Each structure stands twice: as structure tokens, then as C-alpha cells.
Length: 146
Image (tube, rainbow, N blue to C red; front, side, top):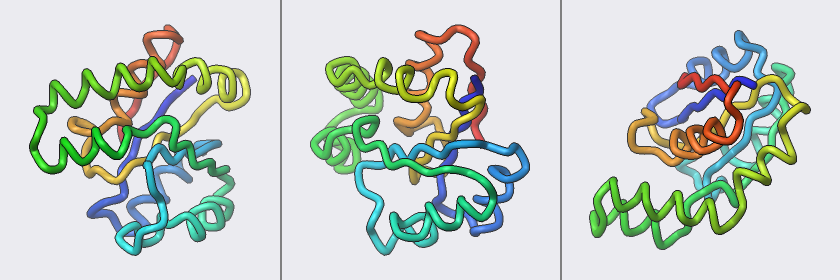
């Protein structure tokens, strides 16, 4: 399986959708905690499934793969370091059984999935961490950051 990751911040709709269309990504998993804010632009809950459908990609919102509100707030308000964020997020994902949930729902069903979050780059984003955790359990997984 190939797991792509992408963020939408600082991207036009064309910059966001064309890589998904070009790579024929079959499923976009929205790993944001919330997907209804006006700040989400073309990636709002009501718009994204329709727009992805135009390029042949399915959509699913998976908040169980997102950080908790507490972890996210602590990071954004600089109450914790990135290393602490990573540790707390990984612990949360393990407690939730999220990697097993991903594997059960998507392995063998799709050749490619894309994890969506808002961050511009994957370095300080949970989508990268989650992709890495999946790859640890699925050795033939390739991760590509769009």
C-alpha cells in the first residue's frame, strides 16, 4: 500500500486536487479533528466529498486518527514541545487501537490512501506520525508526502 499525506493550508484548489488526481489516489482519509471551519475553505466537510468524487477519489472523515483537543491545544499554545506532542499522540493512537482500525478498514481494499490534515508540511503534523505508525505494522507500506 502507498500512503500519501497532504495538507491544504497555503494551497489553491488546483495545487491540492491535481496531485491526488494525477496519482489516482483511491481514498482520502481526513484525519483532522474538525472539518467544518470556514478556515478549511474547499476542504470543508460538505464540499470535499463532492470535489474528490469529481476526480474519482472517495472520502472519509476519521477523527479517531486525529489528536485529542487537549493535545492539539497544548501544542498550539506552546505548552508542550514537539517531542512531547509526538509522545502523547502516539500513546493516544495506541490506546485507541487506531492503527489496527486503519489496517482492518483499508488494507487490501485500497492500493493508495491519502491522509489529510491542515499543516503545510509533514514535519510537525500528526498525519506523518500516523503514517509512520501504520508503516511499522505494515512493512510493505510506502509513505509519500505531497
